[in-house]
Image: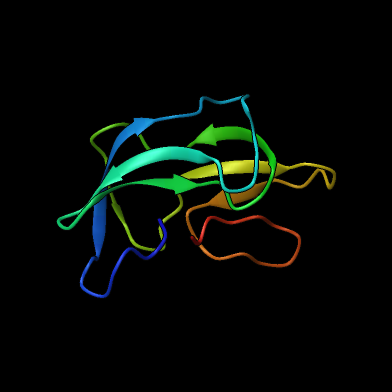
Length: 94
């Protein structure tokens, strides 16, 4: 899960906006999460296909913990949504 403020350390998954197998555009909302400060949509870090939701509604997720796996468009390698972007992988850091 991406950072959402200095004092926010975790959030709760409210609702998946996209389902496994859905194509997503970069910046498109994947999942809605709630923190002690705000409810927010977590955007896709890259265009691709959502291959796996790693968390269910009501799951508590720490900052930096993966929320989903994405297969980025065009390169065929899977990525984890919810952490930082690394070589060839689209990870959710926004």
